Length: 432
Image 1 (tube, rainbow, N blue to C red):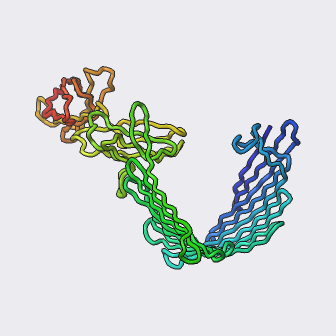
Image 2 (image 1 turned 90 degrees about the horizontal axis):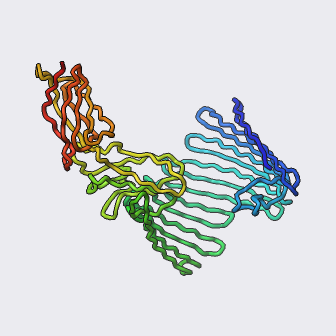
């Protein structure tokens, strides 16, 4: 059996977090584990200071329940040893600079390990920053000191360059990357490499990723050099990835599916109109074409996400309903969303008093389908000029009833045609 408790205490002096757990199984001794941490964030004028302290202890007999993939067949972790950890880190930052320090101590498996380091960064220009970090590591087998220096340059939107030297490996590295938002037609690319001063060998690479509407293409080339420019090896790769998806009777071709997908299919009344998902200044996430409906594949399980819809060249008066949908899928699931409906017609007309000829302002009305009695009535109102408008109507016969003392009603017919906007013209209503 396992049991435990946690507690969080927030005070003006900082936040305290305490936790404890016990275990007791057959043929195993009683075990326990304890932990605690302290956090403080404080503003010092134009500076910010953060402090974190933590400690954790586990007895040799403590047996937590773990996933079977990382444990014995019974679900118990195999590692049975006493361990103790203690760590502290602090960070002080200003407008153009920051400084940090940390230290940790570990005692486990009859081996003690001490790690300590300090560093800082300074922004030379709004787009260039310098970072310097030093670290000392010591255990029962070795001692090591290393210094890392890095220069970062934000070349432009979504494009960065970096150069770094690590004294521990006596190696220099560089990289240039441009990462774009994932939309149809986006291209991300990068290049980089590393040089070892000990072996006089270097490795260099370049890669590119193109996001299409139905596929993702990646290209990569790597070269290894020694003693200057003598080539050791060359490696080139080109991958084209796509997927075939199916949900609720509909197939489509899509980019590789990570965990979930949604097929966005047009209703038969707008089957020839192109549907685009999440239109923005950068482009669209997916679009329908001759290969099938649009498919959204970048969806995380259990995460609520709103997807916007845009339909090109909609017929005048056509009502698609909501211009977006929200997904919160289960893991490894697929869905279908239908854009448009049979109830997509709109009507307009001018309502006047049959006795006086005056426009009837702010008058309520409703449309009831005579061909589909189970359909919900569609409400409508006139504006200050007596203009009546209603959307989301089915084709066929309707009874139009006005909310007046006489409850005046009339029958209208909405043709089942490509003309989504029906003009009723002048509607004369008896109000008494």
